[in-house]
Each structure stands twice: as C-alpha cells, then as structure tokens.
Length: 342
Image (cartoon, rainbow, N blue to C red; front, side, top):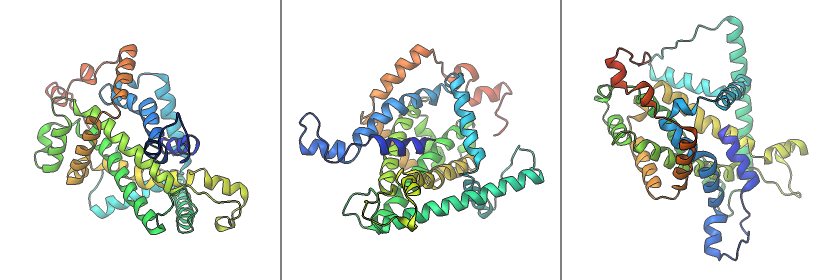
C-alpha cells in the first residue's frame, strides 16, 4: 500500500523540471523541483513521519481505533488476492538455504488451502516476471522517466542498489520491534546486533523516533528515485512495449509495475526475513551503518516539523507510552509475563 501511494504521488504531484514558482533562481529550482525534494518532504512530514513518531512508542493507543482495523482488513484483502505471494517463495527459499527451521503457530494447511496458496504463488511469480520484463525493456529502450544522460546499465544498477537499501531499512524496522521484546542478555553473543540495539535504545527510547524519521526519509527518497527509474514513458511516435494495446500501455505508465517490483524485492521479502531472523538480520555492520545514517538525517533537522505535528497529535489524542501499559521486557519477565514468542 505504501509503495503504491508513493508511486501515485510521484505520478500526480511531482513538479516538472522546468516549473516556475515565485521567481526562484535555477539553483533552488534544481534542488527542490528537478530532484522531487519538495514533494518528498511534503509527503513525508504531513503524510507519514508524524504518525510514525507516535506509533513507534505509543503503539497500543495508536492502533486503538476503527481506522486501524480498516487498514488491517484492507491490507489483508490485498494479501488474500495473492498478487504479492511470490514474497513467500523468497522467504521459504532463504529459510531452506539457511538450514534453519522456523517455528509456526499456524495450523497446517488443508489440501484445498495448499492448492489455493500455491496457485496464488504461481500467479504472483508470473506477474512479477512480466513486471520485470516490461521494466527492463523500457530501461534499455530509454522509455522511462529516468533523467537523461544516465545509461541503461547505470539505471539498472541504481535500481538494484536502491531496492537493497530500501529492503534493509524495511527489515530493520521489523527486526527492531522484534528485539525490543527480548531481554538484553539475549543479545550478548551478537556483537553488531547488540551494538545496534544499544545505540537505538540509548537513553530509553530516545533514538527510536529519530530512527523512524531518518529511515522514512531515506526509504521514501529511494522510492521516489525508483519511481523515476521504473515508470514507463513512451512518446506518441514510439512503439509500445511488446506491442501492448493503448489501454495496457496506460497501465504501464502509471508506475504500478515498478511499485510491484519494489514492494516484493525491496520491501515485503526483506520484512518476512527480518521477522524470522531478527538477530541474524541485525548482526551485520550494514544495519549499524544505516542506523547511524538515519540518526544523522534526523539530527539535521530537515524533517523536524514532523515532530511538532506528532506532538500536537499526541496531545489531542491523549496517547500514552506502551511501557505505561505493559512495562519493559524485564518487567514482564519478572512478573512471569514474558513474551511467549521469545
């Protein structure tokens, strides 16, 4: 859902490179308009960051409303369609290659459920292959909205690198919430995981909202650039990709194909892996480096307006910190209320 929203915002709200506003000079226009920075910052601070700041430490109160229920039902509806089920195939492949067994509390699937599941996986794989084929052909035909002068091979490398960065940041968020339920002693044998978590929770939860702000700015910026790389743009005098009819060509130009690729390869697959192996996911120096970068981005103050909006929202809604209701992991363990999943 988030990827689709970002791509639609990029499609509908990104200013043209030659846009004029209030007589700004070329340096200002190049920074804010040509790079889409103005759209990124507005979408982030108004539409995402302020809620992430509150939900990071006030999760229970934040989810205690009917809109959260609607969002969950809508998201489950998208999952039920099977469009993104190839992510499960990636998860199962990585788990198989790791040689580790993942415990599941779900009941074993019936024959009918298994058949329905695997049919959706095949459908999702076919959709992903089609999206990749169209995007790669468009890249090498220079029929995307990528900036002029970037060679197709360079654009493809940029796409892969950005998807990996987005994937790491998406997975880190899941892994952080998983390890926050663990007692500190469980991290002793994982050097970089312990180093990363100590930095994140330094001074209580002080760095968690900062990470959420810096992370979201990095993720959305990467998503906007991916939208640039993957969104198809064909002139009227050019042949359509694979001889597609006009109606299908319109679908190509919405950027939904690129959003599908990014959602699977740059988001869901990484989140599933991080949920299965949170400590393993954080036990590498890349996670620590990305956390440092996110905290630096937050410290720069470029998105500090989101904290003001978040504070106003928190005061109006009366949000309380999660520890007010459930205590810390050590408190729950001491009261024999430790998290069963860990």
